[in-house]
Length: 100
Image (tube, rainbow, N blue to C red):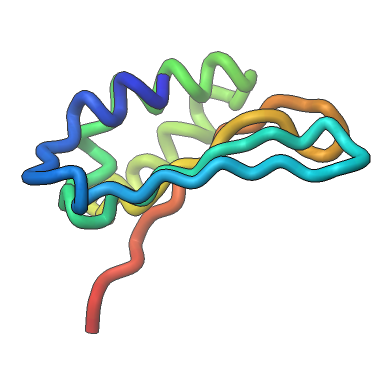
């Protein structure tokens, strides 16, 4: 799903995207973070992929639709995913931060 989201981002150059991987000794954490603020995508553009993510993580459809109704016009910022310190997979969408 991360690849699907990145495929939608109109990056002008590799400098428009920042990628970070994180691992920690002593636990199963292995995660990534992709900063895509410079792509200037709105969350509504990512709706099909986000809908699939909501299904994947068993987020109730109405709760997801209500949230999307509130945030769909916000700028997509970055995404994080992987395995957390407890060994569970996760995927987080960050949004709404804009330059002053």
